Each structure stands twice: as C-alpha cells, then as structure tokens.
Length: 187
Ligand code: IMP
Ligand code: MG
Image (cartoon, rainbow, N blue to C red; front, side):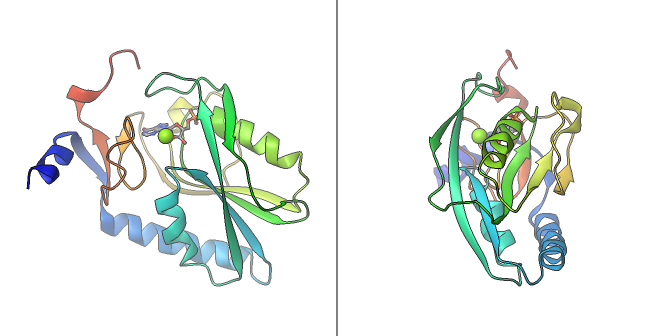
C-alpha cells in the first residue's frame, strides 16, 4: 500500500499519541460536563480542523448539546496566520441567549480566535468559552481566553487529528510534527 507510506513520509516526531489524546479528551469531557451540568450547550466547531476533536469531545459530554460549524479563511501564507479573516460559512443556529463553547483545533497567534470571539460576542450569547485541543503559548500575539486546553505544545508546525498541512494529514490518528523537509522556509 503506497498510500500509507506516502502519508507517513510527511510525519516527523510524534508529539501526542492516540492514547494520550484519548485520555485528555475524556478528562476535558468530564470537566465540561461538570461545568455545564443542567444547561443546554451549543458547541461551535471551527472547520475543518476541529471536526475530529469535536466529534470525540461531544461523545464525552453528559448534558444535552447541539453542534454547529463556522468556516473561516485567513489570508496568511501556508503555515502562518495574518489575522485578517473572513467568514466563509456562518452558523445556522442563532446563538443569542445560548451557552456557547467554541471548539478549536489549535490556538497559534490567537488572531483567528480573537476575531471569531468578537464576532460571536456581538450576537449576545448567554456565555461564551473556548475549548482548544492545542495551544502554542510562545506564538501568541493577542491575549485570548481559552477556558479548556488539551495540550500546550512548543512552537513547531503540527499535523494529524484534524490538523493539516496543505489540506493533508488530517486523518493521522496522532499529533506529529511536520517532517522538517516539508516545513516552508518562509514560516
Ligand atoms: P492563529 O490565528 O495564528 O491562532 O491560527 C489558528 C489556525 O491556524 C488554526 O485554527 C489552524 O487552522 C492553523 N494552524 C496554526 N498552527 C498550526 C499547526 O501547527 N498545524 C496546523 N495548523 C495550524
Ligand atoms: Mg487550518
């Protein structure tokens, strides 16, 4: 099977394996379930990277919840965010008066999330929090409150479990560093 070999050629060091991902998602699910007990939660996933984390996290939640998605485009180069973002797909559900939890794959500079939070806050949700699977604190350019964090990682470009490099590698079941041979020199 050449397909598997091709996929793994881009993979560098594995940072978070399947077992660790699973264990952390279970912990976050328990924490969120306790915090939102008795409430009706709306999970807002940011396409496309958050889909995998969101699907696993949602199945750990013990209260009623709905999901919706937003798609955002950033005008940055391949591995960098410019902070200039555009909403490509907006929510179907009205968030006014709702308890909203934004689910993100990774917070890097924080610019995308910061824009998203401003846009959602203007729609007057009852509460608004963020759950991010990964965060790169060293890269933060703007302070964004992330209530639930899966893992803090170093300043490396990562792939897998939803995270892509040029739309590839999302299907890896672990989080790995992109192979150094593939990292663009401009980043
Ligand atoms: P920010 O606006 O710089 O925080 O960028 C956030 C978005 O950039 C994330 O939602 C990802 O789509 C993407 N991103 C940032 N770092 C990485 C990475 O290491 N691997 C894959 N995508 C990343
Ligand atoms: Mg992305």
